[in-house]
Amino acid sequence: MKKFKIIGSFFLILLFMGTQITNAQENKNSQDLSEKVFTIENCVNEFDMDKTVKTKVGYQYWFADKDFIDGRTLKMSVVAPNQATHAPHKHLTDEFFFILEGTAKFYLDGKTTTAGPYTSFYCPSNVEHGISNAGNTELKYLVIKKYLE
Image (tube, rainbow, N blue to C red):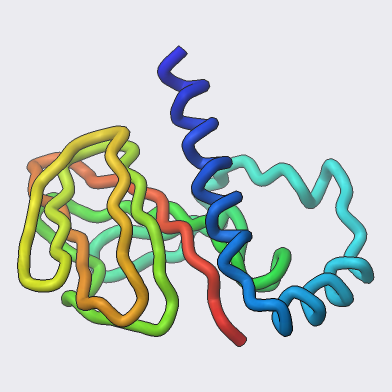
C-alpha cells in the first residue's frame, strides 16, 4: 500500500511541474511532442547499473533526461555516507527531491532539516538549496526538475 502512495505522489509532483510551463513554452513544446513517437519501449525505463553516470561521491541514473519530453526530468542520485554531490547553490528553475533510502540533510535559504525515506523537499526558483547524506549508509533520492532551454 505504501508503494502505491509513493507512486501516486510522484505523479502528482510531475503533474504539478507540468502546470508550471508558460504559454509560449507550451506552444513550442506541443509542436515538439507532436513529432515524437512514444512507444512502450521508450516510455518504460527500468534501472540499469550499466547506464549510471559516476560522480565523485556516488552515481546518478536518468529515468527521464531533458530531451525525453519537454525539459522535465527524473533522476536518481546516490550519495556515499557523509558526502554531498555539490555545495548549496541556486538556479532559475525549481526542483523537488524525494528521499528513497538513507538520511538526508536538506539546506534551504540558511536553514537545515534532516529526514529519511518517503520525504520530499521542494527547492523554489532562485533560492539557495542543497542536499547531503547525513547518515552512514547510501542516500538515494529522486530529483524532479524542469530544465529551461
